[in-house]
Amino acid sequence: MERDGERGFWLYDLRVETVLDGRTPVCRHVEGEYFRVIGESLVFEGAQMVSMYALAAVLPLLPARQRETDPDDWMSTDAEVACADPHCGGRFRIVREGRRWFSHAATTGLPTSRGTPYWREKTK
Image 1 (cartoon, rainbow, N blue to C red):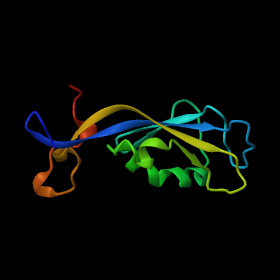
Image 2: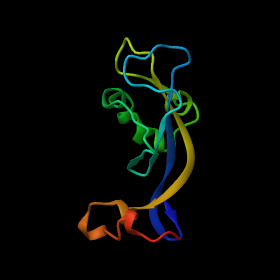
Image 3: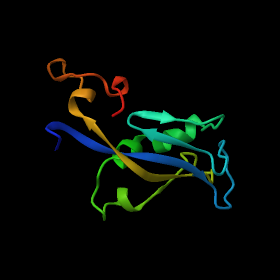
C-alpha cells in the first residue's frame, strides 16, 4: 500500500481492558484496568498491571487484531479473550481505536530498505 508515494501499512491502536462481568478471577484481574497497544509497544499508564500468565492468552492475538480484517472475520467481531487459566473468570476486551500509518522503510529489518526507525521519527 502507498501513501504520499511511500510504501507502508496501517495498524489499529488497541485498548485492552480487563472485564469480569460478575465472574470470579483467579489471576490478578482488576476490572477496568487496561493497557494500550501502539505499534509494537504495550503502553501501561500509572500503576496498572497485568498478570503475565493472563497476558499469555491475549498476546498472540494482538498483532492480528491491529490489522484490517474482513468485517465478518471472527477477529473483527469477537472482542473478548478469556484468561488462560480455565478456572479464572477474567477476560480481556480488545477495542480498536485510531489507526496509524507505518512506512515500510521505518519498520523493516532489511538493510537495503531501512530508513529512520518509526520511534525515532519526528511527529508530523
